[in-house]
Image (cartoon, rainbow, N blue to C red; front, side):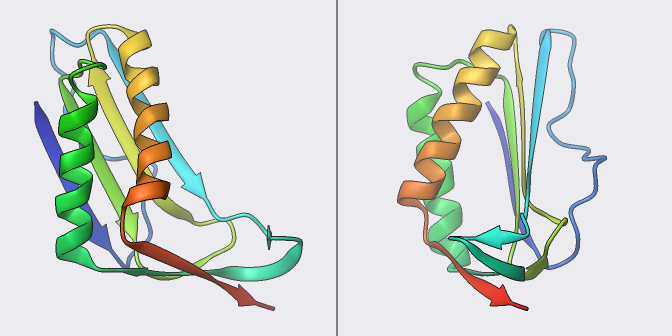
Length: 128
């Protein structure tokens, strides 16, 4: 299992090099989480993310290792922004490769649920 985790302040582009596509993987699933124009009914300019990097990376890796038992995948890449992320910009990218689409989609769904629940990443609204 190839795991790539990165935190950044710069915009997340739509062309991510990770995870690499290899012959044994028939599926590649990519998810881009984009900041919406409202949060909890309030119009916002963006979101401010605070991340405790070392703990977040450790927890993300632990979650992936736990989930891989039930959702076998070849590689996963997680890129998460911190600081201010404006409306329309990507706050997170998750890319997963697997032998088949079912494992990749199930891993993505389970991972995103656990990320929101278990990883020390906090967000606050940046109001207009």
